[in-house]
Every structure is written in C-alpha cells, then in structure tokens.
Length: 113
Image 1 (tube, rainbow, N blue to C red):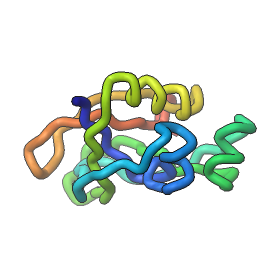
Image 2: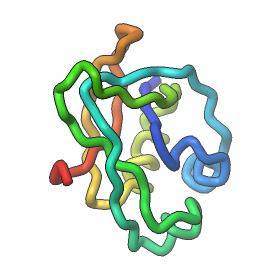
Image 3: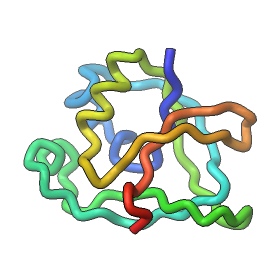
Image 4: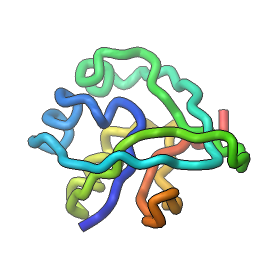
C-alpha cells in the first residue's frame, strides 16, 4: 500500500468517488515546513469533480513554524497513478516525512508559485 497526504480537494467525497471509485479512509497528519497557496485549475474534468476553480497547492518554506494539516490515506499503486492523473501539470508528487514519523506522497506546486 502507498501513503498519500491530502490537504485539499482529494479530501472531498465527490473527488474521491470520481478519482478512485470509492471513499478513502485516513488518519489526520501534520506537515511541517510548508504553507498553502493556490493554483488556478483549467482542466474541465477536475473542475467538474471539485467544483472549484482555485485549488490549494503546497509551497515549501522550510520553516518549523509553518504547518499544514491534512489526512494520510492508504491507497494502492493503481490509485496513486489515478491521483497523478487527477492532479494537473502545475503539481508534482514528492515524498516527505511527517510529525507522526511516517513518510507519505504529497503534491506540491511545481514551480513553488
């Protein structure tokens, strides 16, 4: 199983159903050294699923005082590929370590905004 941290639209029930065909189960998690910015979405399928034109995007600051709360979900490798398809080209997937001492994939702003 893969671990995926979500802090935005992948937490929405409709987005999970559209992307994975099921609702995900996860645990709360806190990521240190990041803030949340925004990316404008133009992909019609993503817009339809999320219902939002602007999506949150993580920006690395490296500062311990900057934290982002979200959820770590256990998903399959196939579902991770489906998440890659859902996230637009303005994002990139990276691995990070969390306060709970686990590592997970997450999507960050590709160009740091």
